[in-house]
Structure formats: structure tokens, C-alpha cells
Image (cartoon, rainbow, N blue to C red; front, side, top):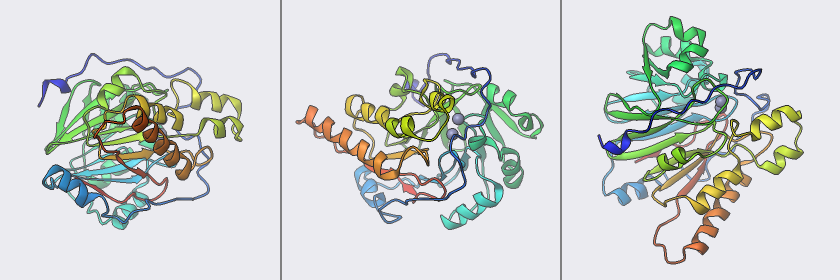
Length: 319
Ligand SMILES: [Zn+2]
Ligand SMILES: [Zn+2]
């Protein structure tokens, strides 16, 4: 456990009054996915070679976006779910599709109370007989969390451990009660999962440094959102500093602040109406090109970009 994992005291991000605590800003009716354009194992051997050994760490994003968020993280000893935005049936179905065994789950870790992240927490905790890890503010906002038999509370900025997985929840700006993103460290692998955040604070950028893999929200193309069908108050919410991260914000990060350490960059939580996998990917690729032009002598390689499908598993990331 390194001292650098201990963070400053939490930043409080309280909900905006009058805004319902439902994360969904997209109509979830139409299913339209694009899978990774690489085979399920592409990237994994290369990543293993880069590290010199395979670690047994795997991350599978089973769903990403307003229709439901859930990721499965496993080591040789520990398995856990991050977020609980998919129904029991859908979770089991997608786990089966991804070849994941649901037994022996060590916990369900929740980022915030919005429906697309927590609507099925009770059902999944019961199904897997697993403890739930969440912030006190999230627990307060989730009535069903009060009756769950096993609830472990974490504090943003303070690490906790599940099996051999170390998690550091850190505060993000979003219109929920106590929203967090997660920095995960296990077997020498460092990942960050940061979705549902209005902008990249200094704290968030600090957490994104030195990681092997970044899962970062690329929610919308700002122009598509502006011209799109949403009522203005929803557009304002999505674009606000407590809303969702745009392709442009991700591009700006990649061009100016990305430290080049991540071998994988997963673009996640894409809006169905105000973004497309192609547009999100292109924005990131063009930003990395601009970065190369700015730092022509840099030997750092670009990360391999994946786009998390909204309603299907992304091929497992193996480290
Ligand atoms: Zn969300
Ligand atoms: Zn949210």
C-alpha cells in the first residue's frame, strides 16, 4: 500500500435541488451497439508482454451508459461487481455471454445512487449473497440500502480492500449525493473507472496518472447535444459541471494532461442520442494525434482505445 493512495479529505458534491435522482438522460428503448472492433483477446497478449507477465487481473464492462452500468473485476482470488445498474436477469445473461462465473462474489461496489448505477443493488446483493460497499451519502439516498444485511461504508479519499483488490474511491463532480469514481490497484495493475462526472477536477486528473488502464466517460458530443432533441433543462444538466463528460473534455485531457502511462483507454457511458462510438473514438484519436504533434520526441505509445457498448459486454481487458 503506497502512501500516494491516501488522498485529501473528501470534496462534498451535493445534489442540485429539484433534480430527480435518476441518472438516465437517454431514452433506453432502442438497442444499438457497436462492439470493440478487435477480437475478444486482442490486446491482452500485447499488454501482458508490456508488463512482462500476466497478472490474472481481468475487467469486463457488462453495460455502460444510461441503460445500466455494471463491470466485473476479477483476480485469481477475488471477484467483484462495480455498480449495479443491470437487472439480475440481464447481469446473469451478460456474464454468461462474457464467460464469467457468478459464484463467489466478494462484493458489489457502488459509485452513486442514480438508477443506471444502483437500481438493482438489492436484487444483485441478494442473488450473489455479497456485501455492498458504498459511501454514506449514497446509502442515505438509497432507501433499499438501509435494509441490506451487509453494507460496508467507505469514505471518499480513503482506501478500502476487498480480498486482494485495493480500491480508492475519490470524489467526482456530479449531481448525486456523494458520487465517487474508483482507482483500483491489484497485482501491480492500476485502473481508474471514472464515469458520471461533469468535468475533470485537479483531483480526478491526479488519480488518472500512472494507470495501466483508464475507463473514462465520453458521454456526448457537445454539438450533437446542443442540436439534439432533449429539452433545454436536460441539456443544461448534462453539460453542467455536475453533469456528464463530453468527448471534447476527454480530448482536451488526452491532448494536454494525459501522462501516457495507460495501455488501454476505454471510452464509456456514451449517450445513445448525443454521441456515437465512431465520433467518440475519432475525437480521442485526433486528440492523441495533436498530443504527438505537441510532443514529437516523446517515446510514449498511444493507448489502445476501446469503446464500451451500451447494452452488451465489452470484450474482457486482461492484464
Ligand atoms: Zn450514469
Ligand atoms: Zn449519475
